[in-house]
Length: 80
Image 1 (cartoon, helix red, strand yellow):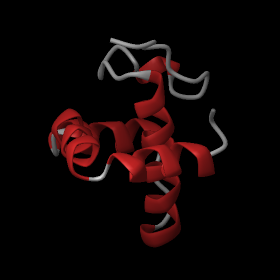
Image 2 (image 1 turned 90 degrees about the vertical axis):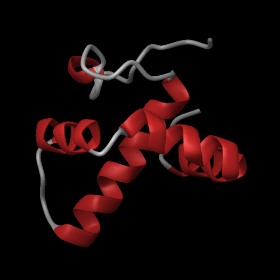
Image 3 (image 1 turned 120 degrees about the vertical axis):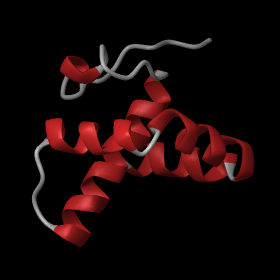
């Protein structure tokens, strides 16, 4: 397993969801996309929503079926 360190902004939530660092970049990009499409939401509410909808299984699905998309999302979110 690779590094599981979350970014500084997401660190408080890393105890609720154990994700690789690259997945936190995807969560950040998904959060920004959600805010642009549906309006302002707190990070805590967004994490709750992810947990309820199965964040790990969604990220695993993306990783298996479109691995390039995850790396593109991570790069465009400003995380390397």
